[in-house]
Length: 109
Image (cartoon, rainbow, N blue to C red):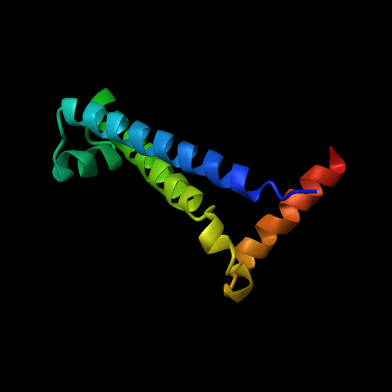
């Protein structure tokens, strides 16, 4: 049976491009919002001032942007040349946990 890695690498590259394009749109949208000052945000945190829709959206779009950047970065690793050397990687416990979760999810479905 032929390995699906070349196909997965192509799909991952396309998905990374999609997240990068989405990130650009998010950044353009965020630029349209009026930007609160750090002092205003501090007052919102202390409940001295109500949270504005714009301030909330700045935070939400920032979290989305960071998530999109992380996803695009992870997807770029799904590359045939990089994966050829996976046996040399020094994996973290988080990466092994993700492998186990994937296997558990597949075996319980």
